[in-house]
Length: 166
Image: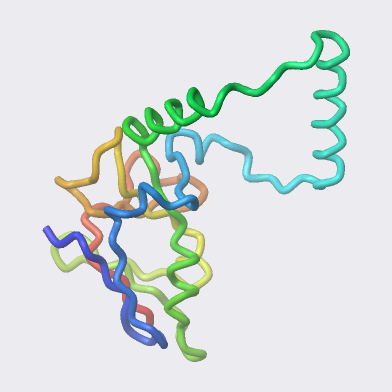
């Protein structure tokens, strides 16, 4: 199984993706919670006001609470990485490849010569799964493709071998 995934075709820069290093990437998302979260954009001022109000109320009722030590936070993050199921948005990689002006589709190559054609807009919303329960996707990987709405969460596109921009 090849672990390097190319983005090729009508792009200014041909890019190769290495899912093995994404575990250290800050853009990764937890796939166990990502599709359950409301994908709503709230008014940022209203959200900020609510959070400050809640914090203020808690301090008045309970007194000031100091944050956990850095040592316990690092331990929690390490355990999360070792046991988590993660994905990463495809959009930054597609943007860095810089599709040409006349490009309209992205072909996802997977399995035994199978293909899925997505528009550039659809492709920029997909999530690339690269880890399950803290382990790389070796049997049916190295990547799984999830739609942003989670409609294929239980049955993602598996054995992804490349992306071609048309």
